[in-house]
Image (cartoon, rainbow, N blue to C red; front, side, top):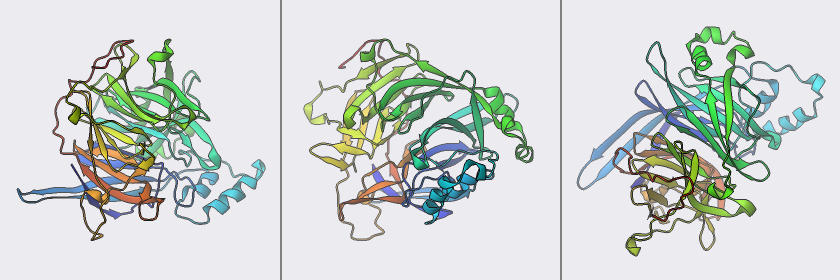
Length: 444
């Protein structure tokens, strides 16, 4: 397992944190989408970037192993927006904060009328991918679903937007029954079985532990996707709206549910489960628990690591928040975050939770002074929080930006670096995920 630098060219995003970063495949080409975040001038943005995998060549030798990942970056400027969004969306301008303050002082009567909307500038929102097979063309279509976040002037959102990844165009949504989660940020959204979206937790002034199922109206979604690009720009707001429905998942037994939290991580397991890992709980206490939600029983169960094996192989998973995780084969891979041992520190290590043995394993990347700035050894990954991470090529994790620790100066800065973690985990069918019943708290 090793970290490697990437080569980026084109319209590379500036330093940012609190953004979303998600991958998908379009016509056989691996791509990532970056949205939103907050820049070094402390102004949120709604910028949209697409990363395309141009080259991922590997030269393998018994004595030496090298790999090069090249990504092209493309910026998608907003085609239609309101006047207020235009003032705040460009994170690269040093004058944005001044303009934003002037905007607030404008009376409503002086505000120019809003046109067709796009998501407002925001950070620490949640996104997830949905795949749908078109009934007529049999083509697999990908959509990114965006929910919530915190915007400029500390506005919290609970809106839902859908990005058509075939056209890179946003679609508004409308809730059928007006029942929806509260506005929040630092929450998580997870897709199970390609189209079932689950929301858990977040922060609205206090940590949350509510769980929701989001259902998309596929007919309206595919109808908008089928419309031509020329026609879609002429459509009104109503014609761009996709119907959605929220359903809250209520658990009667509070002890059989994860405690309130934010800055946690979620990942889909198999086609009928998802996992919740760590986070920040009540009184800002960091957590290190793992919970599994089973769609067949619609219940949560806590999974305790197996400590009946040889003690040398047991690794203690630290209290952690603001991390990212992904599922590779039967391993939940946890990267980055703020860990709490003897003191809080930015994590450079990678933690693996094996769903077959229910054991944690730690891959340490120690702090080593770089002799050459161009070195691509393991220690190029600096501990970070509020970064973006997505999975490519089955077992490689792409990391972009975030708030990065500077060990020498003892400070943290926003970055726009892009790194690849080659996990070298072999792909296999995940059949070993723990099966837990309604009220089962198993030590395995």
